[in-house]
Image (cartoon, rainbow, N blue to C red; front, side, top):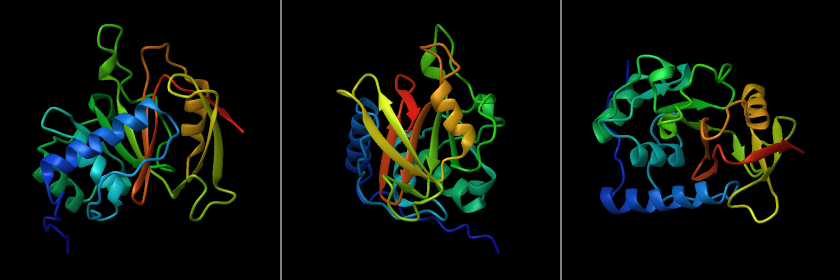
Length: 203
């Protein structure tokens, strides 16, 4: 039987969403820096940080694409109830996409924005096994070297559960700036961002 119960969101919706947004801004402005948003309960398979990002960024004007792993009734019902977000009918119309790191096999289908409206590129929220080489790291861990705006010299970041299509996109960055995709990676209560301005190499 499907679980359609409403799961509690932030205990103080306005202030907690503002705090999370500030943490996201810090993560975007300092790529590779791991931060923690305020606590919130998990939502089904969505871990707390993933749930917090969704509650903060989604609204009635931001269609969300869900991977097969997250496309269950409980997640859809709760995110729509708390944020008003519509489900994207296809990946190209999504402003945000939610998936696990091993579920994305084709990034070509997501919108990159246009020269006039580069902000319309999709932001992918990717839930991983670990950030920073923590739990379950090992052969599935990928260590990235980041450079660019917001990084003084270089910064290393180890991500576990990052599929090869995502690694290739991050390294190759096939879209001419300012077009492209932005990434928020989550695990447990932590998150880290790699925006389109960041240069990425595999260590």
